[in-house]
Image 1: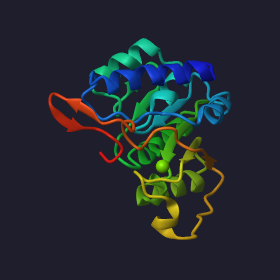
Image 2 (image 1 turned 180 degrees about the vertical axis):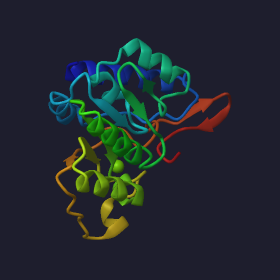
Image 3 (image 1 turned 45 degrees about the horizontal axis):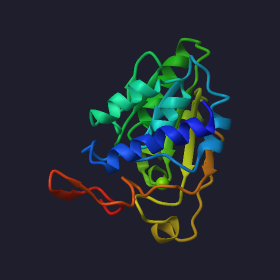
Image 4 (image 1 turned 90 degrees about the horizontal axis):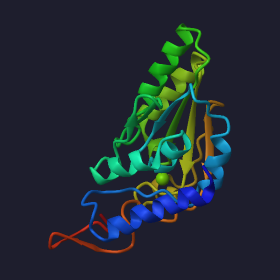
Length: 205
Ligand SMILES: [Mg+2]
């Protein structure tokens, strides 16, 4: 999938959300198209992808259909995108997937499989013990799992400097970080949307 296709898909969903046609929280992707397109050149069909609350681009780049994704989003499952055939799973829990990813990677190693696991996390998850535990297990047991740290310098809306000052963790090789500037707020867009007469959504939701 090309950069323009990713952006256009998200714009279509933004429009629907701002028209109050999706009365659920949606975390829009944007600003990391180039990095992800490059990264997904390495991700094979037989590989497992674990994503986050912000999963639209990951799903499309894994080969998911736009129509199926749109349907899931309209049903309120933007944060719960799942596709067994694609080997694609998300968790909306911060650092909810790393332990599962480590377990799947252990199973793949035991089966001498050629598949790998790619586990996406945000920089908010980097602060979580669950991430640390999974990374250490994968590193120590040399499991076929790569954690992709998508660093947009915000956990919800709090930048790293406020969270932990000047600290930078030196993660092992199984963790790859890329930095990007997000196009959209943490959830929703900058526009306030009236859902059934109630004010909801928006940047501070
Ligand atoms: Mg973040």
